[in-house]
Amino acid sequence: MKKKNFLNFSRYVFLMSSFAVVVMLVIGYRSEVGPLVIVLFASLAVYCMGHAFLKSFSFTIWVFAFVAASMFYPSAFGTWFRFDLGILIVPLIQIIMFGMGTTLNTKDFRRIFTMPWPVFIGIFLQFTVMPLAGYGIAMLFGFDPEVAAGVILIGSCSGGVASNLMTYLAGGNVALSVTMTSCSTLISPVMTPFLMKVLAGKLVPIDFIGMMFSIFNMIIIPIVAGLVANRILYSNNKWANKARSLTFISILSVFLAVVTIFLRKDLFGPLAALKRGIIIGFTLLTVVALTKLIVNSMLNWPKNWMDKALPIVSMSGICFIIAIITARSRDKLLTVGLALVAAAIIHNFIGYIVGYWGARAAKLDEISCRTVSFEVGMQNGGMASGLAMDVLKSVSAALAPAIFGPWMNISGSVLATWWRRKSI
Image 1 (tube, rainbow, N blue to C red):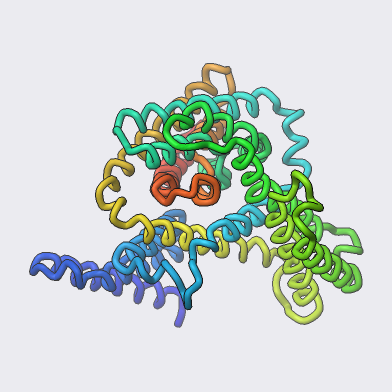
Image 2: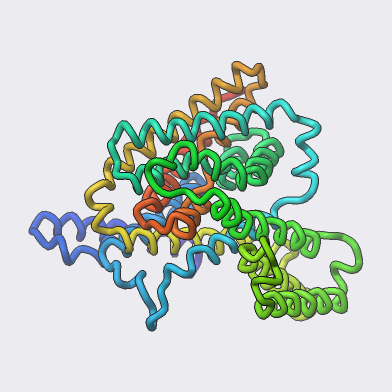
């Protein structure tokens, strides 16, 4: 089926399912409308993926499709063959962060020395305005302690990689955006637990050390492994393209992963909490080296195959994480869902406004102001979801990241489109 015909087909499916949903709701078949709602969002997402203007909204619509599925059929995202799907949340986040690491290189961190003032302004606003805004909004809406802690948590996290994409779409300073995301992520093991301890410590128990190690395990180690993978994938040196070198890297990574699995925790000392991150890091390096070996020797794939594959993997992982969280907190979401959506809109709006005008007050140029606005307004929802489940052990705390994340993508896409059309 040609692309145009496929897009037309998906559009017709969307229109027909939309009509059917409306008719069923009118005649009172509300509980039976679930499959059609899922088809409605899925067909719309497929259509948007092939549309030049709507393409940036496709990820968010896929999220809606997964949320709809988890709301109508929560048991489908509970356990599979007695395996609790909640266990997959942290590994999926680690894979997403590994993907982020593969897009980085050492230049992104060295760039802080060439543009220190804009980077400082962005990170300062991010770790002051957003946590305080999260606290104020949580108190204003009167959320129960665990939900309120989740709102504060999303505001206390580092910048999300989505801000880099929105900056690119808006014609902003992508290099500055990537550097700010990288630097805020590196200091998040200290800043996020500190802010949570100060602002949310009276709402829920906050284990500062536990949260710090969880961030290292879930975020930092996978990103470092991704940086190594970046050298394997994109280096022009001969070693990175020789079958012998790639085979050696694969065998070494497998060996180190297996050794780490079987080493006793007491041998790690205080680093025992990082064991899971180290294992997943070596495992992912093995996958990358083996895949490149197969691609180079057997398959005629383009050299940028990783750039095409990772967005799909990341998008699928985030959708699945949100669906798992939504399924576990379906009843709670029905009572506080609209309030959390309102909180997400307000929090995100504050980030954009304060980020832009704070950068203007610091006398940054217009392009940098727009970049800082995205960086301050868009947090790492995956990181917040993982910390809520892994450290706070609370599905209710994970609700805010699950709702804030999709909204940030919607608002970011709209703002990026508007700024792209507005001349500097």
